[in-house]
Image (cartoon, rainbow, N blue to C red; front, side):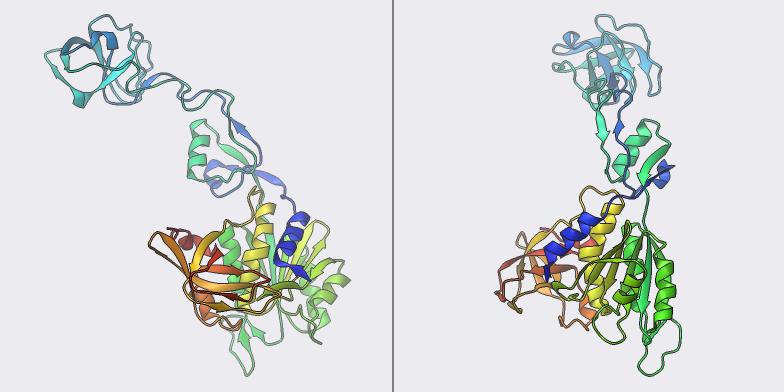
Length: 405
């Protein structure tokens, strides 16, 4: 049986970035750049003032210098004013082009202006408070390589250079299918032995958080015809996720029907708890993830195995999650032979990150998943951990990352 790391690497070896599309700059936030972007010109485009003050020649500014104010340069001035003569100064605003002859700017708070003259105490360093042309970005410099996640700084940079349309990787359309006669959709009355189809809801939320496009297929009932109908529709998407029906029971039809539809099985079962009966297959270039029906296992397998694959399809360069180190607050016992994903809460104290169990770790306990900030990854070959032992933890959601010491 595959280890957790082997299963994740196999999945990642089978998926590739999707096609590309061009979107408006304001719609590009959170997308992944599909073409490299190099600076068409230098930045800043001209020497300009970093402060409101006076443009001067530094050599004129000895102790207690008195300079004649001969002009005013506001931000947005086209430049081209006459060169600065000896013992002259020009009042200048932040961002305005520095006049020829000037080699420094004295901030307004460091001098005094009166009757057409400016009085400066102390020496002035050449280059002081000037932003020089191309000191930030050189013309032709590669700024954003392929695979860059477009955050607010990247959007601002592209906008600075006048980019209106941006090439990005397409977001995957991911079909979601739950299976089982016992399931009812939210809002439907529940009879004896019936439960709400919550897995589809949590998967939709996870996909939206990721930036993918969920496609709800509803519920496949425990018969071949229903499975065939729903799965045929799901295989038209970029990826298909099923939940439940993937074990070896009489009514577990998922793998059998997927094979009938032409899905090639890559693996079934992983040495992981929870989520052992997970299956993965390919339908041409389309990945098919068959997850256990247990809600906790569904969410954990999505986070640890499905999410990295979808990130790769979306063009991300780094798809494996960044793990943190945390000290366990209490001892933990486990069975050897399986990697265990322990639901934990993260605490930051004494400059260190600590992990404490978020509740009952039984796979049927959803509340401990709700309360969890992270998953502690307990190694396959270990059977026990003591309080104070360090473990790797995978933060869940954006808030957990803020708990780092």
